[in-house]
Image 1: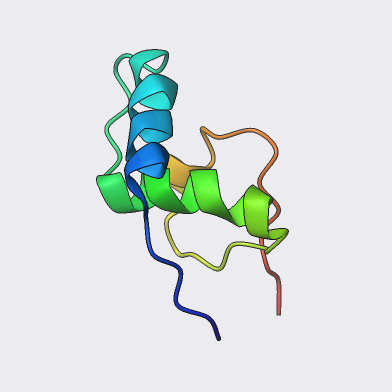
Image 2: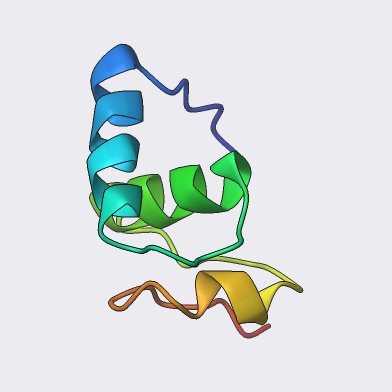
Length: 63
């Protein structure tokens, strides 16, 4: 397990990402995971496929 801090430039990237997703009703947490998981080459574990499924290119952990 690794704690990853969201930096100011990450928040700016999230803002740009979400500007192109009008109508998406996820959370800042969802958007942070969608931005950071590919960068860390980490699969996403979630019960929330509805919101995170909107982000293409995520790999989901299936244990």
